[in-house]
Length: 319
Image (tube, rainbow, N blue to C red; front, top):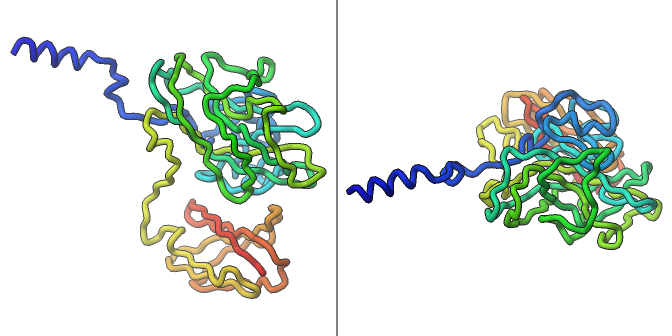
């Protein structure tokens, strides 16, 4: 009995971290918490906890309706993967050597010898007028024991604990970058960007005049639990859930497109072109409504539907 009691107290004395539930060690992982609404480029520090670790990455939020707005901004067009905000960074320049990196202090130091899972989501930005239309690989996450800044930038020396060798071309969807590693130091800081030089970076020019590769980033995760960093978006489905209560058909279409609202709440409908130009913005009160897009040019359009603080994006194809 005495030995069992001693064993019991020994177990209780083990480090608490081994008994804690796994969590995302990245504070403000979706860039939702703000110090202030961004109103210009180079304001990464307006997202609580985040800052520029190399040159001038950017912070985008729906509160801005201009150069760093959401979903349309000076770099392109994209809705947040979750929430109302995301960040952005340049991964390559076709004229000069240039990288932008973001960074943040983790909630706690990593444990040496522990395996960690890492994930984040990116989407390629396109603005041909601004010569932004290059896709690259080597987007990755790197851990440090010290922070960096504009005046003391993070090193670019062909190393990151997690990165992708695949060139990411997708401008419509959010693409997951993920991996795992075993901590060899008590890292307390995380940086994201391209840590590889030009000769180690593969790139593709989608426009021959393009100069810059730029990516939006959302939903950053670091955890000892792979499920936490799986990237699954879990939400409650209720009878008023916007995703399930609004129907759009036919799609693709060459004429009219119909909207069926299966709830009692109105919604705001905004239509954007694939280049991010707003074509329509209207409040829909009727249970059934339609929009004639016969005179629209053939191509892909985006319907942004907002209701009661929720927002979804639907792709509309006009042929």
